[in-house]
Length: 357
Image 1 (cartoon, rainbow, N blue to C red):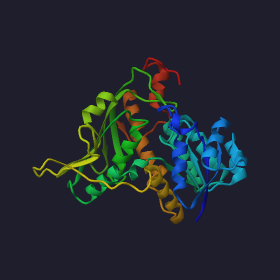
Image 2 (cartoon, helix red, strand yellow; image 1 turned 90 degrees about the vertical axis):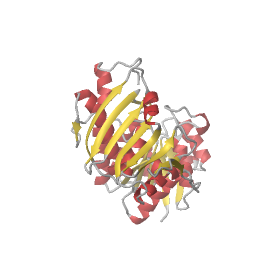
Image 3 (cartoon, rainbow, N blue to C red; image 1 turned 180 degrees about the horizontal axis):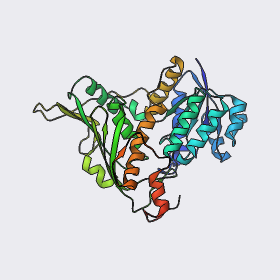
Image 4 (tube, helix red, strand yellow; image 1 turned 60 degrees about the horizontal axis):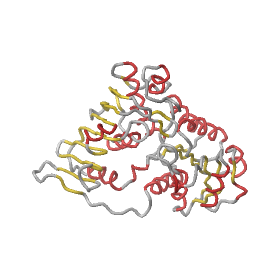
């Protein structure tokens, strides 16, 4: 099948990105769709019309199909797929608006899912009611180093999985990738509880959302596998890699900080660490993710990047923040609607150096 693709939130041109403010993700999505023979890029919308026009020039989109109003764009150009790359606090309202038009067959949204736990669920429900495929850009699932780690695990190279661990910049913006990968490695098994602590003394607002400076979190899945996260500059050093898989017969590390290897394995056989050689992908990682969501549209199969999997990652993140607020272990399913980190900043319980969003 062939698909027409529209974009909401083009952002400024890609050669001047400012990480934490604008990462030109719409362009990265666009280049991914260009790699798919089935996809035609037909329209785009941005509140800054100049940005939308620059995006249209990059991707040969007709000037007649450049908009400020995304709903007008949807009704006039009737796309099959809509990609959304706006700031995080806007994700939920835009996704729900797009779903309620019943125009597209699929929505592909940037991560993290949404600003609050309630909004995450609202997006998923709205798309489910309209039978729209809703996916999120957790593209690292298709990155060779993370994918090869899963293949090694599934082939029994480290025995039975016992623990999954992450070391990253934060839980919300960057950590959503790494926690999503923990769930991927544990075959999407739901978590039962989480216990966490954070430090937030210097304001860190990324793409419109607060992110803690440092955190420690532990959680347990209902199959008994345990999770551990340590974030922030010091937290990353404590773990020493982005993802660690601990099995009964070995350890796999993805992106170890003290090694040039992107992936390494220790089989507990006395030979120590062994670097794993990886093949260069034919497409960008985002392109591989988009190839996957298009294939799922063709076959009507559930996507690995779907809302159900994204919700599992966000539940652990918001659950960690709720553990801080409630000063105790949080049992799942999560019974809150808000973002506890935002709420603690607004109430003054946390007072980072600047709280302007």
